[in-house]
Amino acid sequence: MKPATTYPERRDDVRLLVIDPTRAPSDAALHETRTPALPDFLAAGDLLVVNDAATVPASLRGHDAAGNEIEARLIAARGDDRGADRFVAVLFGAGDWHQRTEDRAPPAALPVGARLRFGTLAAEIVARAPASPRLVELRFAAGGDALWAALYREGRPVQYSYLAHDLPLWAVQTVYAARPWAFEMPSAGRPLSWEILLALRRKGVRWASLTHAAGLSSSGDPAIDAALPLAERYEIPAATVRAVTDTRARGGRVVAVGTTVVRALEGAALKDGGLRGGPGETDLVITPTFRPRVVDGILSGAHAAHESHFSLLAAFAGPDLLAAAAAHAERAGFLTHELGDSMLVLPGALATARDEQRSASGNAA
Amino acid sequence: MSNHIAGKSILVTGGSRGLGRALGLTLGRAGARVVLVARHADELAEVVAEIRAAGGEAHAIVADVADRDAAHAIAGQAAAAVGPIDVLVNNASTLGPVPLRLLLDTDCEDLDRALAVNLVGPFRLTKAVAGPMVLRGGGMIVNVTSDAATEPYERWGAYGASKAALEQLGRVWAAELAGTGVRIVNVDPGEMDTRMHADAIPDANRAQLADPARVAAEIVALLQAEPGPAPGARVAIHTGPSGAEAST
Image (cartoon, rainbow over all chains, first blue to last red; front, side):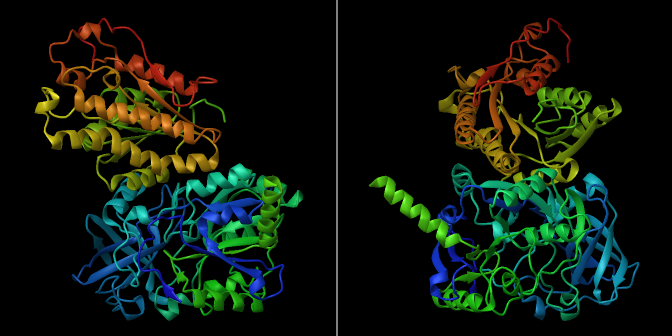
């Protein structure tokens, strides 16, 4: 499968592969459509949970004290985001996003205490991770409002080498993005438009949100990538906990939009006392053997079978069905990555659509 | 959702002068978490300092709402400072070059600028801010308009057209968002004793003009009114003249 190299003409009109794990693993468990049809596969009483984190312009270009080129990609804020002046970052050397991160030159070896400058924004390396000297903690010279103003002035969204053009800030935001917590776009929600969201609501599907600080998905450095994802913070509103509990009690399905929502909800549910509202942090990695407690299905970007993101879909569908889905997506030329096509893994999704079709034709008769 | 504004996160554009400044001060005193946007850093910093000195919370974002890349930067900085926005006041606006000119003498670029500041800027910022309001099921957008939107005043064509279009955006948004909990109103503050008014009509009798502080108080009352104005309504504020020759 190939990555999408450009922004789709309409955010909410990409291909959608619906995967129904209640069916035997064959083509009969798969249905290919487009994202505007998403509401057909959810039913009244289901709950869609989205990550409302806005995407930070997390790529900063500048120089070290010796004048060497440096790019810092912020991947996590340390402490309270309002007062924070420290961020975990991955450092890159000369070059730019047109090169694959694997091919980028590493930065000059920089000790703790090294000073960096990104345009008008000064920073100091205050810690280096054992995993790699490129995984550092930066303290900026500005804090609070002044730091955020500088980040929005000097920073750009993290860019991807497979793209035909660079991504402006608007292109990496979902339509419901609020607080700037995500260092890469929570891209599973990118195809959701208000047309789709309001159609879901008219049907009786509810929405809820949480905020999850999605970090960098990969750096191109095997030592760092082995340590990713770092523990990521989240905040789950009490109203979302109520909506999840209520949906499950009434037999509805909880559909997570993206991995970050799964990590936040399942990470919170694993804690003592079960799913509760409020802030938290999770290092939960969803593996094929993970058994979700609160999430029934997931809307995700399309991924190829060899990608790590794909294997987490196995928590929601068996390996044989996923293999069939991957083969279908490959044959059909699905596009992957941030600007690509979508997959919905949801038990009973195809039965929902069939029932509605029947009732619609019944009404017509 | 309660309409009391204490603790609410409120974003006001054009916050360094006139009605925007008065709104910032009034909202700050009422306990709102205020974020003000304006182009001029120094003037804006003064207003923020004034709100803080009175015990209020205020944050400054230096930006031009007409800048096509500004909306997400403004929305992101505001949410970083005060969390998701509860109320957006699209107040920033420009008359264009003064003295105002007849439409046939208006340069196309000046019409472009009026539309960029008074119409397209609020459109972009509302798009960036209203989405999370809809998702959370509550919020309010106030478009500050003018009677020039409805009356064909000579020489007010570019400004009036931009405000008429802004009002129509408000009405359509209100229709599209019915039932979501997000309310949108167009507010005509009337003729106020502001620098903008003096630029437009230098020889106006200031005693006949409304005090922006009194207008701001009326708008803040409107934000808290229950049930509040109908969605998409056009609300004209009448505080009467300030009567003070030297009010600022």
